[in-house]
Image (cartoon, rainbow, N blue to C red; front, side, top):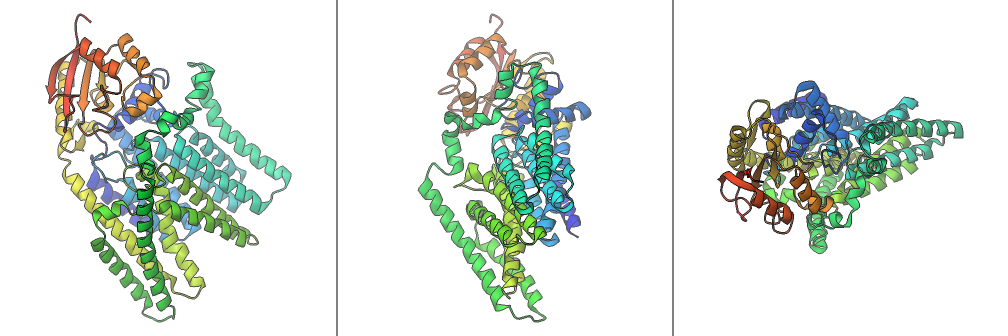
Amino acid sequence: MGPLALVLAAVAALSWTWDTWPDPIVDFGREAYLPWRIASGETLYVDLAHFSGPLSPYLNATWFRLFGPSIRTLVIANLVTTAAFTALLYALLVRLADRFAATVACLAFIVMFACAQYTRIGNYNWVTPYSHELPHGVMLTIAALWCLDRHHRTGDLRFVGAMGFAAGCLVLTKAEVLLAGGLGIAAGLVLTVLIERPPAPKLGRIALVFGAALALPLVVTALAFARVMPLAEVLEWPLGHWRAAARPGLSGARFYLEGMGLDDVGANLALLATTAGWWLLVLAVGAGTAFALRRPHAGRRWWAIGLAVASTGLLYRVVSLDGWHEIARPLPVAMALVAVGGLVATWQARADRERALRAATVTALAVFALVMLAKMMLNARVFQYGFVLAMPATVVLVVALVAWLPRVLDRRGWYGEALGAVMLGAVAAFALSKITIEERLLARKTAVVGSGADRLRADDRGVGIARLLEQIRTRVAAGDTLAVLPEGALLNFIARRRNPTPYYLFDTTSALLWDEAHVARAFAEHPPDWIALIDRGDAPSGPPSFGRTRFVDLVAWVREDYEPVWQLGTPLAGNRGLAVGLLRRRAAS
């Protein structure tokens, strides 16, 4: 019944949220624009600026070449990827726990993350992610750990090779998932070697197969880009993109400090402690009930079912919707405890090879989940970036609460199923609250942007974006070029109008990664025929910084060389709401 429940939940979630996922302005435009231009013959890092690995843009470009460029093509490709990921995750968790726990954890993934809508920006989900590199990297890591488990069971070196290939592809994704996945895979391999203690010849074969498979995607990537780039640039971007994340100006930016919870360490630690206290209270209730029902009798299974229903209703009513936003803060502590518990279990089961290897895989999964939280260590959350950064930890925690902890109580003679029932109720209460939040957000998405396979629903911002898109289609000829400032490359994609420069995003991150003078010079050397302005009015990295403290020379050049032909509101004037405009290059320029 588990796989059937997952399919039904996925169908319900997709039908409810269909066409509401991508945001018309923020981030997702890059995810559609880059593969479209690659499919049209342009080259990443040469013709198109990019600060992550090349795997995802080129994979999506392949889908565009095969099925045509559209938002719908990306959505369907991502749905297939998400379905495959869910199947891998389910198979792995069945091995590490049981079918019931695997079903509950995968249901949590589908309901809470796969089609998530926690904020007005609809890119924080697996269907239209703000960065494809992250879900692709998570899938590669889970696939590698599944292969590790298969190798444990069969001893087949082909699964070691598949692990190495997945690790090599992981290098071509994004820094945060590369670090987390790499450490998780390394932990699994090291523990496997310590448990099995293979003879030197066998260990050499394992190392050779893993290393050769890992090198394969890297060598292919290096050779492909070496045809169009100097080797130093190949090592800097396609293969060394992850180093950009360590740049002081980027890692120390206020936006990232707030995301990690380092802007106010004391307050965030206090919130973490408070939330952890509520977690412990719910756990104490479950453990107390497990102790009270320790003596077997015919009705205690019904008591467990009643506890699940009662805890669902009580927590749903007692915890406010804002309170659920803070519920994930203790996740790093929980994952650290699971990782330590996995190590202890590995040591205790060292005489039982199968149990020890299973505990080693649990440890590797917990290490991966813990490091994925590094970007939000004191501000862990399931919304925004949490759809992928907090997802592994949430899934592991669900399994721990529903399966592993109850088994510990069972071994002590308690009724562990009672604890599992209370925890199941807590998960269900959070899912219901998430649905309530999502219902309110989806009700605001009444504006339609684009049409056909590029159709999407948006909130009130979509009205202005749809009107700007209509102006672009009416005024900008098919062969004309267009740049959208400071963000909104999705308009380039939907209108199929090319940006003649490599740059398509002008936020704080871009200003730190690309020299502003270089960007301005690129526009002067390859001026677009048209420029569209989008002023969100609430963007922390766009206005008012854009044109005032960031990209000042670029905006001055635009105002000198371009004339407005249509606008809604006054873009770049410090608006409190959306303002858009379309500018044409002056004939004398």
